[in-house]
Length: 166
Image 1: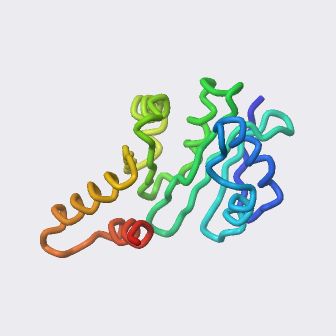
Image 2: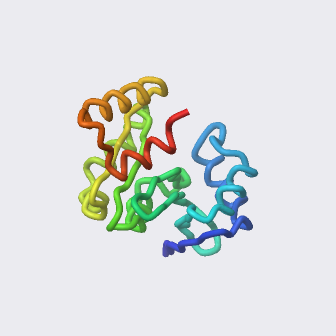
């Protein structure tokens, strides 16, 4: 039976998370040290999917009082297609705007998210950024400029701008 546990500030589970990433990706997008540092952050929490004692998937989230951003989600290959990612997504807060970026090449994830009523019903807003690096930044900056011609930004826009402007 799959069990979900939410953790925060527990860098001792970094190795198990790293093992999920090395199972999913040819090269892990995060190093073990990056995962340990992320697990030490005050605003970051993880939902871990366990099969017995083994971590088989996780959801990494950075959250503040206005929004939550999905930093990473992964489920080991042998467990994919069993609804575990949807169960992890169900851990997201329902009272905040949710940000999620998905690579255009990750068609399986895009299809799962867009067609999952379970995921969509759990959040007020779900932003899916289909990107190829520079195009995303230009497109979103343009969208913000045109959406706020009067010069006012929402709290969400300010949060996004603080995270993504360089």
